[in-house]
Image (cartoon, rainbow, N blue to C red):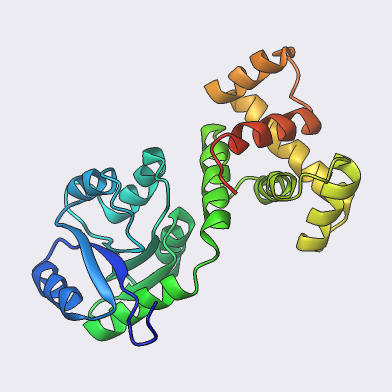
Length: 250
């Protein structure tokens, strides 16, 4: 890239009010942004995202018509996008509980209305500049999708231990001794003992076994295991890592 050339970030915009047109024009005028799509309601936005436009950042109004902003965040996961955009959500709420739900659903940052357009776009660009490497983002995304298929959410016991253990196995294939190496790595990360990691993952699998979603029953069938007992930590992590590896491109 020529030193004088300014990098353009692809922005997708979803806004249900009059601000949509104003923001569109402002994004087009900025030298560091390129408008790759705009929608005035949640349903139209999901259709746009499914077209493979691959925006760097999505500016998402929480109060979209037809499908709300938070429902869009949840539905985006089923699109299985090749690359998830950074998501900046605009909202009128200052309720910490509601804002926390937006973040848990996938928003990376929140901006309270009314806002200044320059500050909004600068924050959107900052998200792009400070985003983790896309390969790791893709892996986090696939792990999250997989666990959701198992009906396990971020609030469930052991979710983060299970997620991190699989991530370690995929990023460091040399970690063969599950109980020793993987649990120790996770324990160091979370500041707990390897035994606590093992126990947390066990509780997470027991919860999945109790709910018994279709994805879990398929795992039991593939592994030729009894449907009566929970899948072991080793078998569950091994099969999960194997399936995610098929879609992940490190």
